[in-house]
Length: 384
Image (cartoon, rainbow, N blue to C red; front, side, top):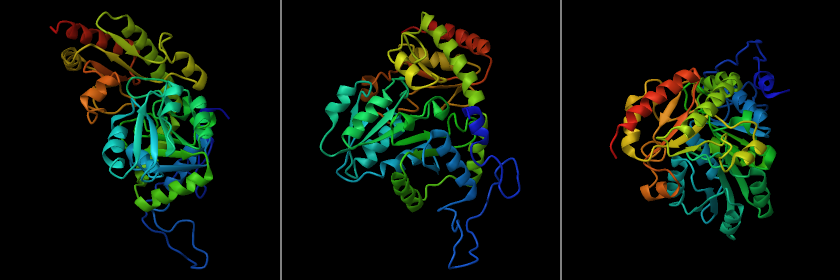
């Protein structure tokens, strides 16, 4: 089955008990045990719940993995995966990683003795050079947030396997519809399901899929032990969002490509970051390892003053944290997604005071272009 069919009929498309077209919300914290010698599949909702199980099985199916896990947020999912590592272990991480991931690595895991080296993972030789005797994992974002760098998943996964490292990929921007890292050799995939998978700005959630049953058992022990599970109503919302993922992402990505080309020609825009542009450094690689370029792009206006003027002038996009929703969202990474990253580190990664991230929604693309045009006109009058 193709993705559009699998997302609707691949697993748990109907309730096995009643035949309901939507998996019920099992709003229960505990489950009656009729026979102590033969306990039921579920006992306590932290350890397992039928609604959460349905979502976990579905995301594992879509990513082509063995086990799926639903967490209370994207960062809960990412942090739980990092708990697979121990004090003294060393990780190699994409240098322009999401600010929340950077924060947990540098402020929390560093205190617990986990060492991290941030590397430009678009350069395989730089990754190879960063490997130490105690390196245990490689963490990748591709495309990266917010400069949309593209790393070679198959090549880096092979390199990691040669050295006995776990490869972990944040697949939030492209989802399993456009990109499936496990099929390219990765060991673990993480998602902020708050974004495109949920898709409606109404739920905060994280998902993880493992390709190996052994790793899956280890991660289940962490999920159950720490208890950072996704609530059942939020599980239901994520499953509802998944049903329309293909339709939403196709429309948003088509519009993003149009807007990226338009911005690239605008005299006020100094640079556009979007893998769908032929001139993007990772364009050809992205076309090989994924089936789409996504709905997120970034563009640089050169200074904070122009950014402020544009954000005050736009009418249609939300000016907000987050991305991947039905409505278009404009974010200012320097003060939003990457505010926890020191200014010098941000600038070194290309996250300048003039950079804006645009997550394109389902509005008519001509309306979005007209709004951006008038907002850029307002920004052009700013003296810098």
